[in-house]
Image 1: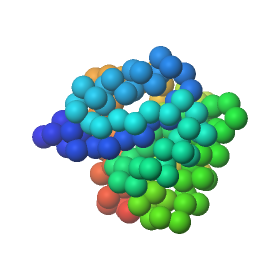
Image 2 (image 1 turned 30 degrees about the vertical axis):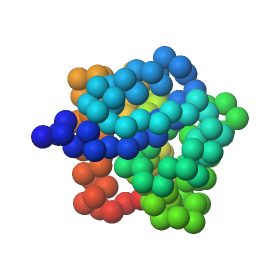
Image 3 (image 1 turned 120 degrees about the vertical axis):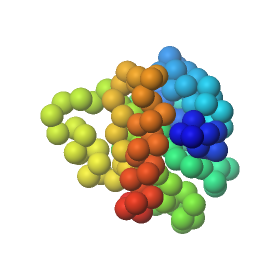
Image 4 (image 1 turned 180 degrees about the vertical axis):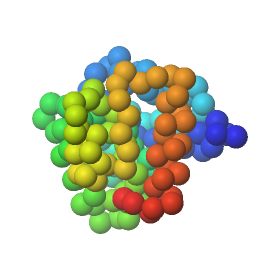
Length: 138
């Protein structure tokens, strides 16, 4: 049932590292999610103008030029609720004490540590999305 849900997802993956982007996208596509990829925050901004029915976004935090933090501000500042209120999940190697709390306090809807675990990745996303629906937090 969970994996049937994943087949309905339309996802924007923003990750500057080609290998990480490929792994995340491959897992999502394995479960038939529709995946759009951006290698930078700037690329993501261009895509956001075209993608108004995303289920959620996955952002790396540490990217050159436009970080995941800056990209989140860009998303939340968009005039269309379909974009400004889309759930945004941080996928990051930031794992120091307090990083998770800082990421959530900044407005991300969830936090997944790298390297992603292919066995639990879809479940982690589904749990975050369920929490978003319950709390309507965006």
